[in-house]
Length: 169
Length: 323
Image 1 (cartoon, chains in turn green, cyan):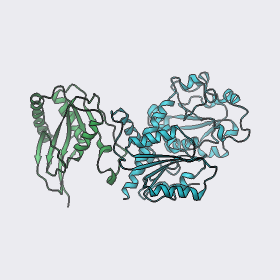
Image 2 (cartoon, one colour; image 1 turned 60 degrees about the horizontal axis):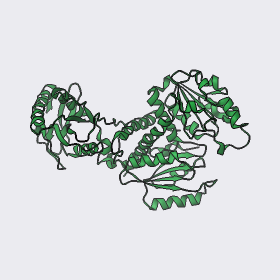
Image 3 (cartoon, rainbow over the protein chains, first blue to last red; image 1 turned 90 degrees about the vertical axis):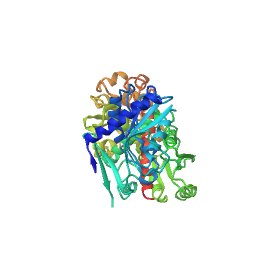
Image 4 (spheres, chains in turn green, orange; image 1 turned 60 degrees about the vertical axis):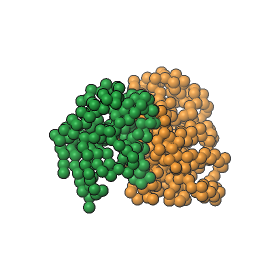
């Protein structure tokens, strides 16, 4: 299965609608948005623009916070994280492309807390798939998919964005 | 002098960091890229990442050092490693057996990395060839041989101020090339990064005979040597390493080779002035230069932390991959 740019736009539309409601109803006054490298940043760029969020978009590379460094080691091309606003007391919308095990979101939250104490964190993902290994929950979801352990979702981009589901033997 | 392959694992990745010799452009660039990432951590409220949590790093210093030891210590702590500082009174020679005994004891405490500084050339290499396979060794300066993390932090500082294309740059190293492990490592690193022109400027007595074989241009006149250079690296006059009458006096040295504001005008208008520290003010350069707009001496210290974090985590990566 594969979803290309057009279909991804539709999923982004779904996320935009849900986020507008969430920001209004929770409420999340003057929120900041942070994308997780690499796919999360591509989605966050679109959401950030569509929602007209005033604070500049932040991005996180969670490589230094992974729990599998002792197994797979470090990639030297880690981009520096950029959070161009104070994290303290800020409502933060954390954006990733795929929520799978929950380990990336865990690492991203740890990193955010090393910058300060946010008022709240809302996780927004393009695709939520089965296979959670940690108690992590996405408040905003573009689409939910049930997949087996041998199936993988991968977002490639940034132009065009394409979502692919691959099977490994 | 050194077996370059000892530093690399079977996949060609950094395992120990002993000398710049035998490394390649890609490994040096990886270190600089990783250091770039780590330098962002200082902007965090909590200036720490959990990368080396649970690892124990031993600073094994057989020779006095403040700046190098503290930046290694800070680098290890910012990676969440536990740090042990051991200062061993310097003895003039590597006493093979007692040094090995020290090592065996530290290994028995389950340490993961040794950062070694020693007055004898080859000490870090000796230790690396005797430690258990899961331990990484980083050379923090051995005799007159090498000081590779200092060279890399200098490369990082140059890249930060002048951009990543070293081919455009003319770099001059001024001072006691003969006794300087820093200069030796810098010259190797500048060569690997394809620097346009490397110059060394020093009195004849302070330049080793083989200098020209390293692909560098030798000058004995400071004002001629720094003409149109982009970067000037001043070296410390190593009084404690100087034997015999290589120089008439410090005053005489400053008169001929001291960097003054007036002499600096021979270099490019945007020249960057570096010094590995500690500075002998009024000997290598006057204070108006050391503290002036062209100086990046304090940035070098800051960059030292990020570069050492990069070297430590890249060496550990290889160790972990082998488990």
